Length: 196
Image (cartoon, rainbow, N blue to C red; front, side, top):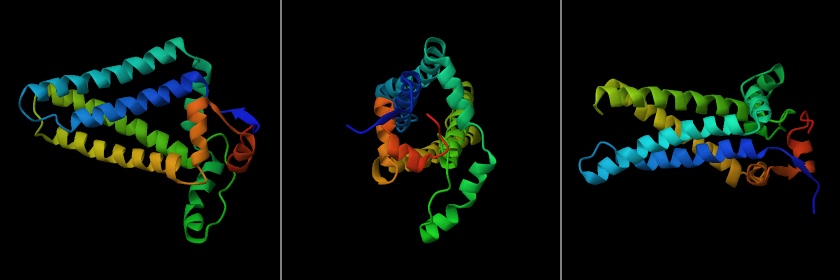
């Protein structure tokens, strides 16, 4: 059995999977919102409940879970350092010539940017969603912003899924979000500045 290293706590994994499940629940229910009939009413209630479960669930995990780990992860994901800017600046060379990735810490700059953009899009979705409920219409400029934020978030999620499931170099990370552990050698190769 390969030597494993702890990457994510149960609390960190719980937030990730709650957000993932809520996203797909919100997306599927949101696709039928705006139509007429009892099915629409049920899906609209489902949509609102999914948004509430996401916020309430994350709050519950933060209150009852490993706050220190969650705080540390949020701090790591929310900060771009000089090394991260170098990582982002090297993207063209990696795409054009296959140059190796610059060394990264526990999260690379791509993961950090993805996290920040997901948080921004979720905030936009909540603000525009609440405004749509208050205004009582699905045909205004704010609802258009809700749709655009949904599309942007879908693009981010598709990219995330590609990196987790398809890309051969990064799909080993999926084990970390499933079990909490990753292969030590893989971590050294992809995240050499991370000290577990």
